Image (cartoon, rainbow, N blue to C red; front, side, top):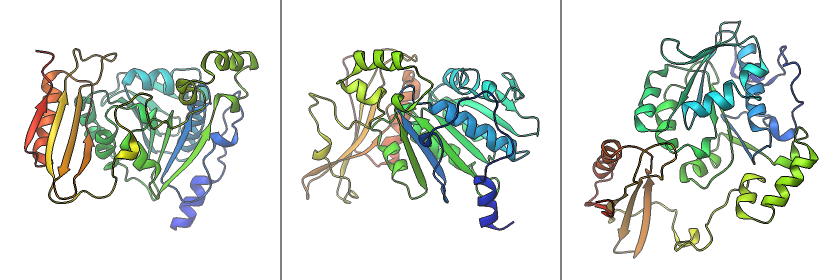
Length: 323
């Protein structure tokens, strides 16, 4: 099969269609063309998960024996949103079987032999599990921009996206100004669509008005309802336009900054780990990496130490207000 034929086979409407599911709007369908990653940016209630479930199920139904991977910020997020939720895969395709305790991890199986692992990546330990996920045809990143381990998870998972002629990725997310997420948006192989809660006919007019009454005119409303990518926080000491984005020079003095959190559960603050450098010649500073995460001390310390060596830093600077 030629590349063009394989691409056409991937994008043509499949024979299988979900029954009893909402009709998708334009923002819930990927643009035509030769893309590698489709990112659906949208606010809460825009129908992102419905779009992801329908696309994922169509793809798995059309290609017998395909191997997929669903990745969310936590395993619970993946199960609640993508698998068992009202817009999840089990609601979209009732013939799918979910095996939470399958060898190798929780697994979805389709009648035609296609299957998908379901994983969360809240800490580096779970990110490392992606190495054992094997080679895959398709990834679905749920709430990609909210994943605290996005870059590390993407770097490890991407090495396994090599099955078939044209493997692909989709992402359903409310956008957030993470540097790596911005890089994916700007990638040559990425296509995007955008929707808001007001684009979803499945949400009643009364609910939309209630949300507008509560969030209208606020920054959180711009993000959560309209799915806007907000750059700066009001009152912040640092503004995005103050930073340079060109390649850093060779004379940087690099340090790793660490601001530990008090706890390490899903509701904790992030332990801030930032790699930054200063050029004495140019008199400019550069942020080289944001490795912030939720993790116990042994894990975040290991991340900081790896960064120290990887970026050839001269010091690790840690805030000591936690004793």
